[in-house]
Length: 421
Image (cartoon, rainbow, N blue to C red; front, side, top):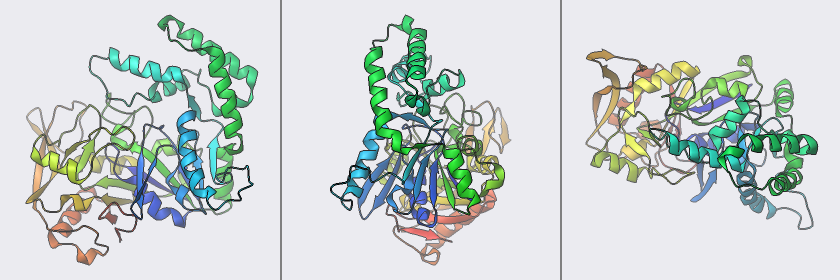
């Protein structure tokens, strides 16, 4: 059976730490959507590991890590990311071995789509033309998904069919020739052919791989990127990502079905952050917002951009819990709220003169807050009974409002600073 771990805010919730913490119990860790615009940071013994495409189980020797068909892949970015882990594992490998130490440990779907250089160019051109910028990472994610939907995308499996690859690439470059994009066809084709050699040992039909794993009783963890409020269908459109970050994405992005899913853990910070443009009802534009940013080190793993910060929006969390069928919540970074005189949560919105408890299509809304007395210290605590009473009251209210049990509480960036309930 499978466990899903997904963000229930606007991403950057700390999913990587939860996956890393639980991965030792699982046989497979699977990334199912998004591209290298996502980023997970894991801290082990004070050392930071930044992950963008490779699943967070990579640091556990027993885990098989799968990049599913729903992911769009920049081959150069993946190559660079693999090298940092190959270097780690090579320390224990035979010095005469020409095999990558990740062989048999990392698997890439032959149905995943490739991000090509022209996607990156188109991404930036599109952003410049918009009346209001989305705030994309400019890494070509959206245009790669556009080609996928337009049925002209190039899949990983195409790398091994030279005539088909040549024809597809030529057709795609012809379609954008009016934009005067300066790309050499033969050079690009040769680069893709070299990547075919590099990645061949890792490319499989990952759907069949996962089906066999399920049939053999293996434990599978599905790892989402970004967060539910950035879902292309159910997020704060148009300021969203280009994939389904909600529960539907983990099904379409792997080939698993609803009966394969046993538990869904929604990951949320104890406050809110957002990168890029778009609505953010509880955003703080004052010294409190800056304090959250500095204490939480709220800068993107992928881009380094400052994250917008604000109070926890429980209306959005409750929406995401219902949308994804969350059976548990993981509450991250509660230690960042240490030392505040008071802590607030959003429990409703004022919209067109009315009080509502749901997310409307018209996002011109004002938050309605409930205020809690602050607390002194939760940092590095590992037992629920050690938490200050005020923090426990805060946690209990989140559970009551969302109707979802909090089973994990993170009290620092370190792997082992976590309360499990």
